[in-house]
Image (cartoon, rainbow, N blue to C red; front, side):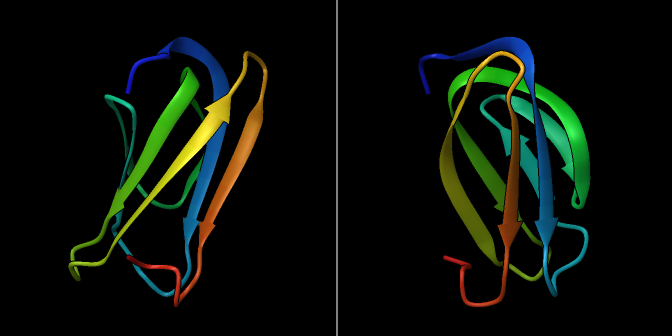
Length: 79
């Protein structure tokens, strides 16, 4: 999405009950969850999580410089 670029925010992602889920923020791939305080772009960014089981989760987060966000996906939140 527009307005999601550069660097300066940190994001942690955890998936409860799912393993090896790939995490992407905007155009930046963070690798497999859990991720802890990874450097991510700032702005309105779409967080996409895709698991080998086929489960997916998407959430838009507003990230400012110096922000630290957490996304925890629990059973029942998968889309």
